[in-house]
Image (cartoon, rainbow, N blue to C red; front, side, top):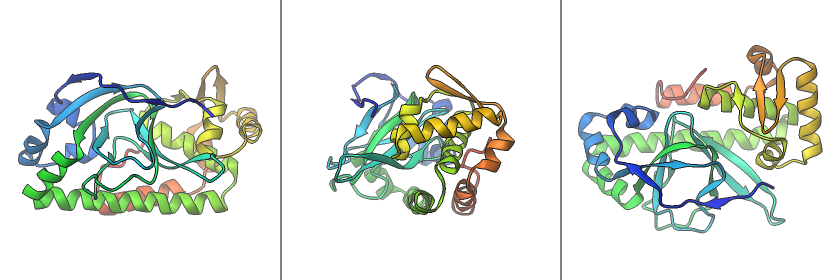
Length: 254
């Protein structure tokens, strides 16, 4: 298991319009709603494996990944084994989207790919939603898309092979970061997927032999995106389609 660290207070600045344009949920808001939120927001630069909130915590902050940054919801079983159930990139947000933050989180939210995140106190977001029915409806739609992703992940983990799931995860990283060099190790892949490292090692070796990827220290390089898509299950496509129907145009597609 790779090590998690707790987020520190390292503010950079109040977000600019350019910052907000790097997150799909924020980019499409009308100007009045962006103004409501911007004054309560702060941009932070976060490293991989930083915890945004732990399971059982009150959700006091809401986080919007910018650009290539991303986070994940991670659930731990009774034996202490962890597995990601949803990845959140520039198409979404982590934290108090529906509740007002007083309910405890069921999952741990952790940064998977480093970068800039916009943070807003969940109470401030709730206050802004009370002032704007459009804002309230927009985030409710996103919560529906997030639940769809969690549901599809449950199906994927139960029905698809480790190779299919690995290909899906690498594709998701490519789509969110826009970079064919994915900064992820075998150990991290195993932890994210909740499987043993030997399984991941065999899958990556097979992909290298097929010319799909190249492995270097601490990263996987995608050499044949078309072939990688053919190895992946169709779960990502289903999620992309649902996002497009409910929140048209915000899901990143490479």
